[in-house]
Length: 126
Image 1 (tube, rainbow, N blue to C red):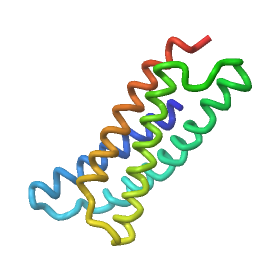
Image 2: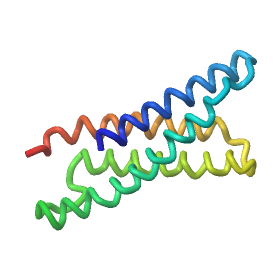
Image 3: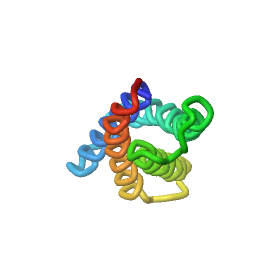
């Protein structure tokens, strides 16, 4: 999940750079959108895999009841937020939506929730 977290924050960084350029009235920096998408797609896919594998691992490998920890709820929140940001991002890419602000907020909240989930997961390490 460390790779997922790194990809999430690199995608967030690229997204924030695009936002700053847009707010300053500058053109899109060349290649930044492609970099954002190239980082965000695997991040969202890996977040989805983590969202599914966490409760499965808790139940089958550790004999725990899934979603009984703060880490579980934060990870669920992060996964849902990142998947929602990914869905809005796909709509933006297809031109079917103009919800750049919603996409940005979902991505930022998802990244923050992912960081909190990682921090909360340290107590669960063997």
